[in-house]
Length: 201
Picture (spheres, rainbow, N blue to C red):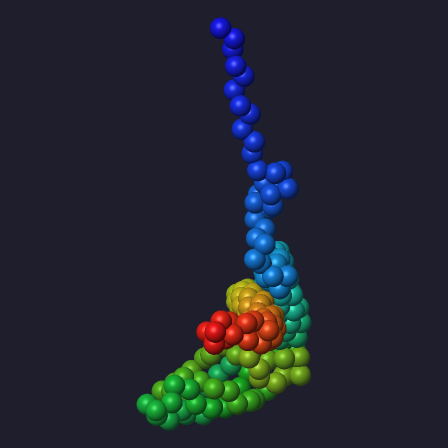
């Protein structure tokens, strides 16, 4: 008894198999393929650019704030002052201006006006910040403020990039949709008379 060879099952052509693996569709228009690749590019830009933008902007803001903090720390110093005027006990305001007097390290006696807590008694001792010219000012910027500015700026940069990428994607999609609608209208103008002729027979 002779052994017959089993029929060879022919599969789909390699070209079609390759097209199916690649996910191509003969019904897809060039604009569809462009939109698909454009979205992939945007996702890549977002994945790479988002952390770079956030970290870059945050570190820049942190460095700038720290330079300001170092400059203010070098130009300002804290002194002990005595309150020389009474402060009205006004419950409507947490702080009120009052006159104070202090003595610099070189023995110079200075006076000025600063905000003190409501209800502070005349003659009380308080700490104030002054610059090199003896002008009352605020405390220097701290490292905590620098970190806060860095995180806030980095977060805003990340949010701005997400909004920008979304706006670009929406804008390109709107342009492509307009072109598709125009193409559909043009094709329908060619096909519609043929369909209408069938019903007139």
